[in-house]
Each structure stands twice: as C-alpha cells, then as structure tokens.
Image 1 (cartoon, rainbow over the protein chains, first blue to last red):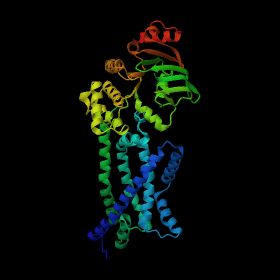
Image 2: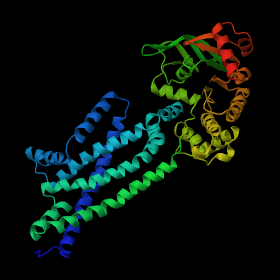
Image 3: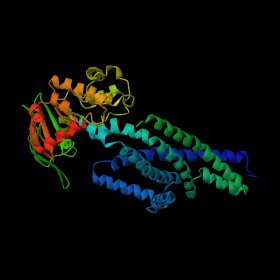
Image 4: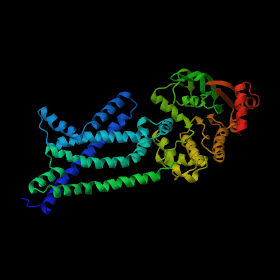
Length: 218
Length: 245
C-alpha cells in the first residue's frame, strides 16, 4: 500500500488527527465541567469538601496519564465490561483534565483578594451570588492564559492513547512508519501536525497574558 | 431607639483578647466616632457590628437583632448596614454604575431601571454623576472611595460603618471623602466611624469612644473629650496626634 511516505500517508495522518482533536475537545469539555466542580468544592467553606478535593487533585496529578489510561482500559474490563478504547481514553483524559483544570481554577479563585469577599458579603450577597457576580468573573480572566496553556498539554497528552490502539495521530504515525519502513518522515509529519494544532493556542495564551497584564493596574 | 447596643462585648482571636467588656450605645441619627491606636480593637469592633467577625461574649444588638445571627438573618441585617472599607474594595471588573447597581439588583431584586435610577441618585450625591461609565482603575483613590460610599448608600441602609476610610488617601483626597461623610451626618444618617482624622471627629461626632487595649478607655462628647481628656493614655494619644500634624 505504501511504497514511500507521500500524500496518501499525509491524508491518513490528517484523518487520524481528527481523533486527536475530538479526544482533546471531549476531555477539555468534560474535564472542564468536572474541573469547575472540583475548583468550587476545593474552595468551599466545608473542610471535608476541601480535603477530599485536595486529595483527588494530588492523586490524579501524582499519577502518569498513561497509568490513568491503563486503569480505565484494563481496570474496567476486569469487572467484565468491555470498554471501547475511545471511551477509556475519554474517561482517563477527563479525569486528568479535571484535576489540572480544577487546580488552575482553584488558584485563580484563591488569588482574588479576601476584601472582595468581604465587600460583597457586607452588601448582603449569598455565597453563590458572590461567586457568580464578583469572584468568578475576576478569576476567569486570571485563569484564561494557564487554561489555554493546559489545553496545549492536553492535546499532546492524547498521544498516550495510541497505547490502547486508538488510531489517533501518534498511532497512525506508528502504523505508517511500520508500513513504509521510513519512521523519520512519518514522525516528523506527526510532529508538524501537533505543532500546527498547538502553536496557535500557545500564541493565543501568550497574547491573553500580555493583554490581561496591561489591563491590570496596581 | 438604639441602632447599636453593645453590652460587655468581648472578642478573642485564639489566645489574643482584642475586645473586652466593650459597652456603648449608638442612638438613631447620631454619629459615633471610635479613635485609638492601631491594634486597640476599633476596627474589630466595627467588623463585629455587621457580622464580619463573631463576638465571643456579651451582647451585641444591631437594629434590634442580637448577634450572632444565622446566615439568612445576617444577610438580611447586612442589607440595612452599609460598610465602607479602608481599601475601597470596589469590584474592578465593573463600571462605577455597575458597582453601585449590583447589590440592589441581585440582593434586593430591584429591576434594572429602578436600580439605575438609584445608582444615578447616589452617584450624584457623592459628586460622581459624570463618572458612571468609568472603571475603578480610572478613578483616583478619593473618587473610588466615594463610589464605595455610593455603593453602600444604594442599599438605603439604616446604619453606615466607616473603617478608616481615608487612611489610604493623601490629604487633598481625604477632604473630598470627609465632605461626603459630613453631609451624610447632617442628613441624619446613623454612623459609626473609625478614623484617625481628629479634626473631622471633633466636627462630626456626637460621641467619641477612645479605645485602648481592647477596652473603651474613655468616652464622651467630642468637646469635653478632646479638650479635657481624663486618662493619661488619651492625653498621650492626642498629643502624639498633634505632634504628627
């Protein structure tokens, strides 16, 4: 099928890259939802909720993504449920994202001055009103650059799912390398596609950072 | 009728006693000024009045409600009690007008038009009718503090608390803020102020409380308190103030 690395191979890589994008988007969206909950619980007044979410974040951040993936894939299979690779990959990356995004957003919430809480509290706001109108809008701005930065990490981390034979970008690169016996062009092409996906996001994150920095005074 | 009635109030932070046996009365329409050194407990006393700090002993009654209160009742009380802070604490992501409108909107459930009308009235009152669309960072410290006062006034409080609201301002800007507070006092707003501005305290106070080591060391009307202090601590405090000026 492949005599050499050419347009056909490149097309296959781009098709596979759709899975990389889909998986990143899915993990970012679901992990974002879960991460938002983690951030809120991590900053809640209840010490139990703080401790539990702190432990969750520590455990997930202290585990390689690959291991999360194997646990999701082989672990769930052990109970007798046959997990499709895409589902296992989504679960693992969602958990991974929820811990990192939760921690990023926890930091953003904590960086808002205590005096903002006191001022809004003194006006009779409920905790939820304080979060919704005063704290989160400010925390959101602060968290944007690291959040986009994390998305770049996430896109690259989807490459581990190649190990449970999900044919995303990296896995397709391996397959083409094997078929053409020319691994270098295949993996250079793979690297370039990752770069094209990530570079605009990195630039976006940097421009956000400088723009927000200019906007903030004293 | 007393707006604030404190009877033997005490407050500890861990081992540290910051208030002990504090008793005073703030009648409706009167201005009570608390003076004293840093760390004498005056700000803590003020923060207890709107429940930012919980008292550990004694009785503290605000607008007929005995503190501490459960969360919902405390929020209802805070609607009636405005507080202005040393560091203004405006919401930096909102315009001046939005800063003033937000609490009437979401806490009192006022409609947008109604809240805007109130916002315009109170911003005019503090002399900032032309700064409605400005962001806090575009305003001077004095202007920010006046917005903060307007933000509290928009809730139509029965009692206003001022916590060293001019301490972060240079003398020129201090004047514009004090004029706003003075006007409020003349209109009959009940107020408790913590301040280092002795001249202002003399003019505006109906009663002055001198706090020392967490206690009310000496109290009385400003004329007698400032001209003939009875305790050496107050004498020393007032002399130190004169030397500084």
